[in-house]
Amino acid sequence: MNEKIVVGLDIGTTKICAMVGRINEYGKLEILGVGKANSDGVKEGIVSNIHKTTDSITQAIEEAEKTSGIDINVVNVGIAGKHIKSFRHRGSITRSSDNDEITLEDLNRLTNDMYRIVTEPGTEIIHVMPQHYIVDYEENIKDPVGMAGVKLEADFHIITAQTNAIKNIKRAVERAGLHIENLILEPLASSLAVLSDEEKEAGIALVDIGGGTTDIAIFYDGIIRHTAVIPFGGDIITSDIKHGCQVLDNQAELLKIKFGNSLSEEATENEVVSIPGIRGRTPKEISIKNLARIIEARMEEIIELVHSEIIRSGYANRLAGGIVITGGGAQLLNIQSLFELKTGLDTRIGYPNEYLGKSKDEKVKLPMFATTMGLVLAGFKTIDEREENYLKNAHQAYAPSHTGKQSTKQQAKGDFFSTIVRKTKELLIDDFGENNY
Image 1 (cartoon, rainbow, N blue to C red):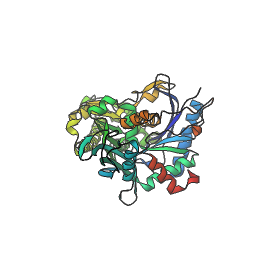
Image 2 (image 1 turned 90 degrees about the vertical axis):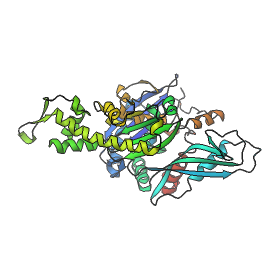
Image 3 (image 1 turned 180 degrees about the vertical axis):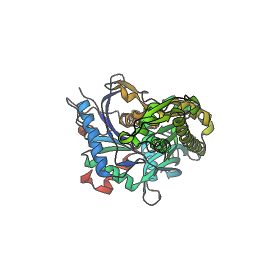
Image 4 (image 1 turned 135 degrees about the vertical axis):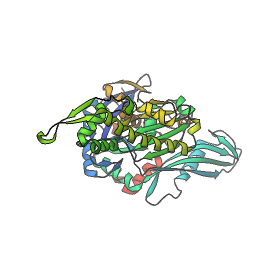
């Protein structure tokens, strides 16, 4: 049986997760295997210790290989961190004649020109995403292919990352014996797993609460409009609990997961939980109400920062779909209610089952696996629906490449994100040399 296999690798602050998937006969994503390891070498989404990160990647990949029976060599890798920045920029090209139709090649040439613009020192462009096009001064054109015109312009949403952060991710992945197929901003990957096309069309804000950061991606009219990274996540809540309740790190994490509540008014007044004392000391009693107050205070701060980014995007009044929360932090009790209370926007929890078929492990349906699943889907889908339409029209459907025991090393490179991630891959080759890539 010939089929395409894709592996997603999420290098997060709390965990490193590898996921293997394929598209089944019903067009749904089938998860073949999952591997997970503690992330000891990543802080706030940035690789800070390459050796420890490599060990964790190797552990996660080996587990994924064991559960899936797949020989993993090629991965889609997510990138996040407080160093991620975005801005808008307008570009234009002049075509030779207005008699010929605007082609996909014209759009690619315009997009590729954006990779040449000057960014802050020490940063690189990782994604260039067209918003709308202008043809001979006619504005707000979503898809200009097939139109006639001489001057082609577009407003682009451009996302940058620190060059050293990209290099460190690449070093850690390559030292684990892997090859990076695509490097993708994590909230964009998460959006593939938890958002429907209708939500993206209506207007939606995706909020991915991870361990080290909270990532935001805003969609409207089916197009990504705004991205941002807030340098706070679940880990800082754990730290608050540790200091507020005077307990150990692992105890604080367990308190958050098992007894945490985002709304203190919903917590039972007289309920307490007993924590074992250190080295035979008297057990410590923790008030569930007090625990909820600590969590609520920090979550309110994070939500205020999220709401500020939504307002700054200019789309606050156009989000008919409201907010979708995903990531490990979305599993906190009553977090949906707190978001609605503080932002006034309809909110739901984003479970990564929008395109999910059967799976060997039911745990992959939890919000904490949204990014990893999105990285797998990135091998089969595109964030911008226009890209998919272009590929269909050009008859560039993927060609199966596996027979028997599948190996991701041998799968054909698709045209996914042809104008978005190709430059990132070229950048990695330029930095480290063709032989190392």
